[in-house]
Image (tube, rainbow, N blue to C red; front, side):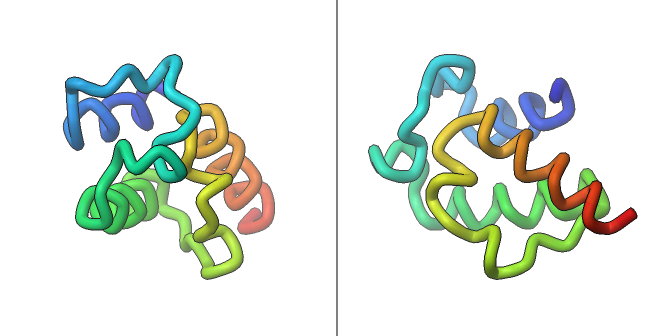
Length: 77
């Protein structure tokens, strides 16, 4: 999860990712940052994020993103 936190901190270090649970729904991240985040997660974790995973619930918090990453990795094994 440290690698994910590094990605997020590079994206915007002023956001409290450990406690924020409405990154998408609360419009904390704008569309440019979201697109960048999806690309960086895919590249750094060597996964393909299919459209079915591109829903706000998977990106509203760091825990949700981490759960999504783990689920995709399990599916790709």
